[in-house]
Length: 481
Image 1 (cartoon, rainbow, N blue to C red):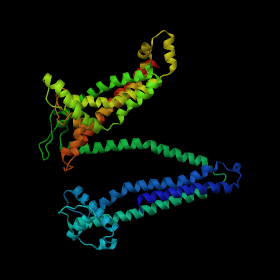
Image 2: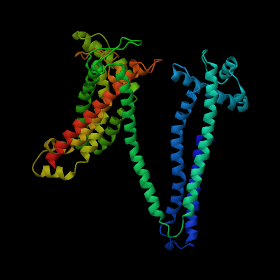
Image 3: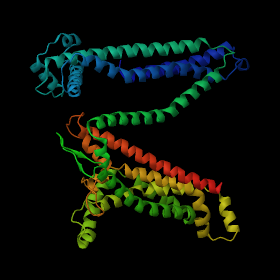
Image 4: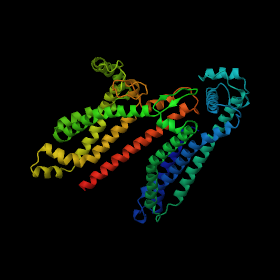
């Protein structure tokens, strides 16, 4: 049974449980709702929740655990393989091809299980279903693929049986408990509360998982590359095969340089636009201008990158860099910073506009009552009151600028260097993370694992930025509260 069909079947059981649970509650009260502790819908909702939620939780856990368990078991069939990750990729590809061969009627499941490692016949049949295999597939790999496919099918059958059994058990348990005195509303609301708590923990669990994955791989990196060289070296020169110099400071400098230029463009324009739209513009103009401004946030970053590469870069080179003798390349920090600043204007303007509009009207009226002008009210009352939210908007824009990749690739280039010249090509941490993980490289090499160290460093840097912003906001709030 496919995953979609299984999920649909569980949902059908849950809907049926709701209907039958509601009917059982009504029949147990003999139509007199006053005899029921809760409304009939709560009884049906209880049955539906106990039917669907445990089944879906089991399904999610099974889907998460099954691949790891199967690959661990299949890996034992491949002793002595040097590049086990690449071999397992072939195993999965062959297993996928065998499934397609059976699905399209080339061979039966029994024929697949009886098939021996006739690799020429295997490649021919794989080619028939569009699966390409290399010339170095070993008989042991094919046998491992057959085992992988068999275990995967057994896992799917086991999951189907287990999920349906849990759904039916939950259905029966909740259905048989329905009596007029059963506190269905309390049970249902408690169940929903647990679900809401679990949903709120997803973000925390995701963050913890991301941090732990970065930490583990970074520790692995520092075991094979000195941490002192990584944090103190001023040279970034990866050489796959050995002899690399992986100093982070050129990348940190490029990230900060591009981000500062972007914020220098976005913060004044976005903040002034927000003040105008919130305090000076008419309702008609605001209704037109704000959506048009927010369109900038919906443009794909690749479009901004092409705009930087084709239009902004050559313009800056021809009208500023070459006449001033500062460079001859269209790829530069200034190009990426200007285009990125245009992209993040809506992050500042839209959020700041909403925050300024949320300032109570009584503060404005009080300021006007004391004789202040509109501009004085904006400077002395509204902006200070909205400062925490504005700082949050700027911080969000800064985080967006620090994490941008495509605009930097096309606008600023990929040269890792320390320079004050804004018309020279440079690069950022995120660009190098992508470049180090791209291509057919050995995952255990320091040139690949350095991507995780870069990611963890960027995470820590962003965390420090958030902490500093929170300290500033709290200090300001203490003065005004």
